[in-house]
Length: 411
Image (cartoon, rainbow, N blue to C red; front, top):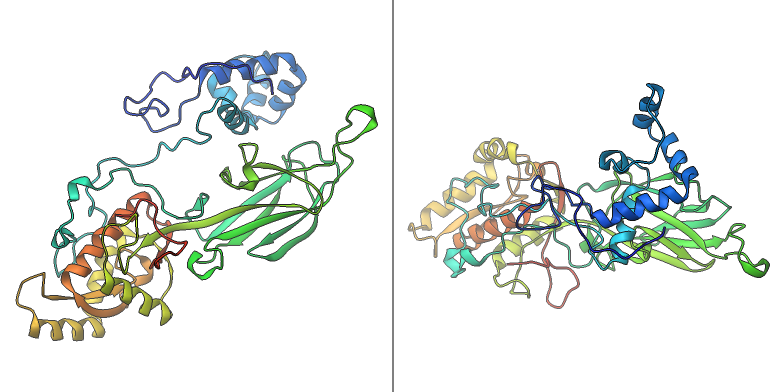
């Protein structure tokens, strides 16, 4: 694609005041320079435009009703082009702009709004002297290593030849195990689907799931000068919903495409978002909840899940079930005998998984821990869940000193 240098003037008119790269309704802004370059490219290759029209059912219907096939700059029509997103990301990289713009983060939401207080008190961290007014207000899915964070542990990826299929052949491995052998890369319009189940990062040697594509054989290739052909294997990997794998060897050209030689490989990291409960202060975190963290470790070691599902609507119903759970009754009866009403010295009955997670099921692992530790960790969990919608799946972890796994924007 011809990339004429242009200033990033935005094509969208409803630009948000706080972030010029996001619209007021939370969509990423399309640079007008990119639209101009795209129009220039299409005007130079009318056949490419016609090929794209053939793949657009909306445009085909317009043509059937008497519409023309002229090249036009209607933004909605251009966005329907099959390779629009790829071209946009290439353009942004070439113009030193962020490849992907995140306009989905929530701003200035109360910390504990997604975790209703339980019977033992509100989620609050002031017992530890935290200044809640200084907490970050932009919520992002957390992971120390993986930049490609998914919302479900079962994911679907698409792999394909980014050029005209010419026999490029690869092996595909997931966490070191071969899942596709001698795969001849198909055309991008009919990609090969790969279904994977993400494993908890904390249980993996590299602390993230790894997808590896190994070059086996280059196809006929592109004819170069002096009778030489291009020896590279060019492939693309995307999520089935259009997710781009980036900041990895599979995105070296800026849009989820990679070039490898036979015998060489490219890797991409894949993970769920993390919810961190710190046993000690591990930078960038500034607080610790040692008793909550130990309880997480004990419960997970006993077989309770590391990967859990966010289900806020069911929180109160699960708490009602927990109130009748024998282990909770026993714990609260014991605490009642020793508590004096001071949250700094009193004890709460901690649950794992917490009630906000579906896997709690009203039958969690229950342990008596200090009230300030329990309620402080609850506030932190509420913070990390701000980046996740209901039905998202996350991994609850206890980071270790000097370990690879932690929450980037920890509190």
